[in-house]
Amino acid sequence: MPTESIIAIYGSPRRKGNTATLLKKAVQGARDAGAAVDEIFLRDLKISPCMEIYGCKHGGECRISDDFQKVRDRLLAARGLMLASPIFFYTVSAHAKILMDRFQSLWVKKHWVEDAPLGKPVYTRKGMFIAVGATKGKKLFDGTLLTVRYFFDVMDMQLWRTLLYRGMDLEGDVLKHPEYLEEAYQAGTEFAKMLLDGQS
Ligand SMILES: Cc1cc2nc3c(=O)[nH]c(=O)nc-3n(C[C@H](O)[C@H](O)[C@H](O)COP(=O)(O)O)c2cc1C
Image 1 (cartoon, rainbow, N blue to C red):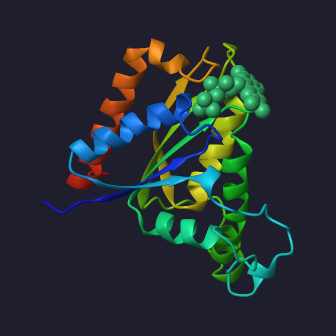
Image 2 (tube, helix red, strand yellow):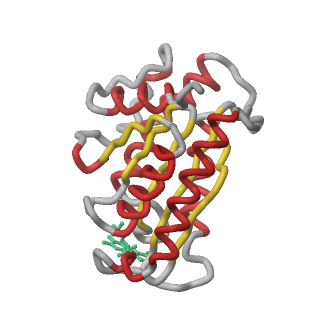
């Protein structure tokens, strides 16, 4: 059976925080199912915010040279993405958002350089998203999900599943919820199996 590659992106500044713990479980599940998983901790990388200079208009390559290019190449090579981020002011963490904004260069490549039509995503890959917030409001994930969906679209990636958890704030709070950890493990397993089976 061929191994399928998945990239796991840890978006929290906390190395062992709630989202990192959940994503680690999903990674374990995917590996146990036979997938190859490449892990990236955004907090360890130096990635500048997008400077909106649109150097990418000329060929689609971002002109800021830093760790973004490495992450982009690994992400574009993967069949699946597992992204995890805490909710910060009703969206993703700054680490995750900075990475997303740099992918504007890919949007420019597709739609300005290569003239692909807008609003017609062609999904060739899949992703899952894990988020945790401290509060319990009904709209807690609304802003984040718009951001994540649009980011996934730019990468031709269908949002396959979301795992969204409320009411956890301190590092380690997620350990009080073994059912969430089990759900993340199962999601990782299913995600990998789906990619390995080549299901649509
Ligand atoms: C800068 C910052 C902004 C936050 N904004 C929100 C928020 O808008 N809504 C919320 O419910 N929790 C918010 N939180 C709480 C985090 O979402 C919560 O602590 C989460 O469990 C952190 O996940 P992590 O351990 O993976 O980093 C915020 C925390 C920080 C540090």
